[in-house]
Image 1 (cartoon, rainbow, N blue to C red):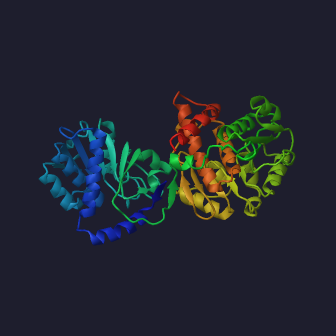
Image 2: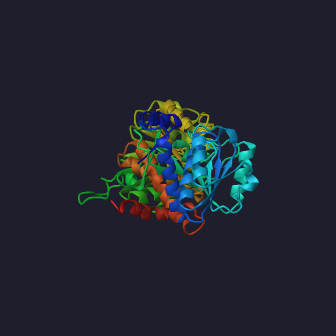
Image 3: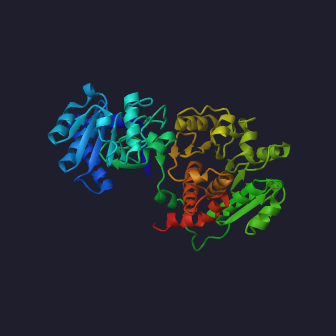
Length: 476
């Protein structure tokens, strides 16, 4: 499991290390890790053409010292000083002593010929978009052939929220120091960070602001059935989704639940004929949830409509003492009476996309983690905010940011699949926040497998769920 940290948390962890080590030692450690990662990415040093985009302060110092290390290994290194009067003095001296070149004009930096460009413009304290001179240099770098590597955090990306307010450095790789910053994996920051590489600085870190599951973490929550298991012992999930007019949500949600944990799925709703035809393995009831039989968790809302009957069904399910996942039309109905959730003692998982989140009455803003955490605390529920980097939070403050998925998942029906996956995990007895986070991870892996063959549809994700489960669990 990867801990995700705010800038203040990292600074607090750095302070005791800085106090007990010689001046500059921590920067040297970071710069060595940066240079080593760059050599691994490029595969060579001799003849490597490197351009450093250097701003003021320690982030520029990291880039300069890494440039000095690369120059010492035979690279041709040029530093473009974007704030010459405030460039890190020791780092600048180190680069010059190693044979590096220093310029102050972007047109003279050789960005059109660079093999590697290091972004050392701003660090974790940077706010807002790039200034004009920096934006021009980044534009030249993007137009050139060089590998784009950010130092600690891509300049223009908020280290805490991932917000991008203006121009920012679009890294293909980010080499971050001490801890993974939250802004590298959430919001627009995820798209600007590229592949994230962590350089361990030996920091004694506090509890993280958020966490990210690994494949192994999710595999541990997907145990194989044992010799004594039967169809009832692996979690029985009930699904109320779709309608006679629009049966697709019921078919997708039921199929996803079956493909995730194929113990027992009970379907109750007006898409019964379509679900029965698609999934003979499900137990199908053409009626209300109360008539479906015993279940251990419910999924309600996807494609179910917003009429009076749908409202009665939502109220009935939320009135039970079972874990319940509410999605799509269920969220639209819930927006009229949030006390249906606030008053529950059993676990509730809400899975809104951005528009549904605001429809529930919550302000999204630039801080997706903060907004999700606040909504979860207000409602006393687990909130799964869908997006490129899905955020999951519970009422006690636990937060997970999903690290899997593909933009190809932005297509109709994939949310219904996610609901079925999470519902199946809820029925196994997993804590609700873990079921939601693990479900998002598994759904993302299935989407990646489905997208390997080209554009996907939601049914492709359902079909790839068994292979995704296998890949997660095969190595344990």
